[in-house]
Length: 258
Image 1 (cartoon, helix red, strand yellow):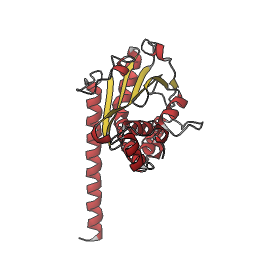
Image 2: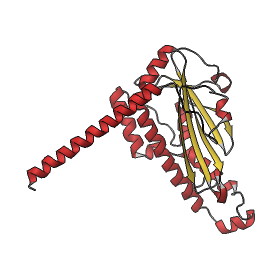
Image 3: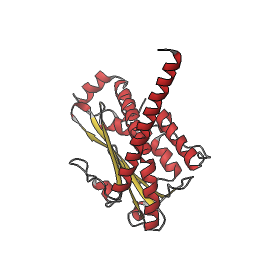
C-alpha cells in the first residue's frame, strides 16, 4: 500500500470513528431528554436518609461508587481534599463548556480541595456525619454562560421554591468493608423550581450530562489512588496495628496525612 492509499485509509477510519462517536452522543442525549424526570430508584444499599432530608423528590440523579483499599476515615479525608483540576479530563471538559457557552473561568482564586473549593464558590455544607458522609447543596442556573452558585441555609434548602432555579445536592459518603477497606459513594440530585427552569435545565442536562458523568468517574479514580497512597504510606504501620489491635482504628492524628 502506497503513502496516498494509507492516508486515504486513515482518513476513512477517522471519519468512521467520528461518525460513530457523534451517533453515540446523539443517542445518549436523546435518551437523557426522553427519560428526564424519571430518575432511577436507589438499589439496596444506595438509600440515603441524610440526603432525603434535603431533597426527597428529584428530577435527575447520578450515583457512582468505588471500592477503596483504605479505611473509611482515610477515604473520606481524601474525598474531601481531591483536586479535580489535576485531572486532564476535567480540565478539557470544563474548557469545552467555556468555549461552547461563551463563558469565562472564575476570576478569583479558589482552594484546591473539593469541599473547600465548592464552599468558596457558593455551595453550602447542609449536613455532615464526621468521617462518614457530607451533603452539599446550592441553587443555580447552569444554563447561563457564567454559572453562579447561591447559598441557601440548611434549614431553608428543602423548602426553597423561588422560580427560575435548579436545586442541586450532592454527597460524599463512605461505608466500611471488611479487612480495612471501604466503599466510597457519591450521589447528585437535582430538581427545578418552576416550568421555565425545568425546560432550561432539561436542555442543559441532556447536552452536558455526558461530561458531568466523565468528571465524576475521573474523580473516583483520583480519590481511590490518593486514599490508597495515604494508607500505604502511613508511618509505623506495624506498631500502629499492635497498639490498636489487628484491624484497629487508625490514629486520628495521622488521618489525611500525605
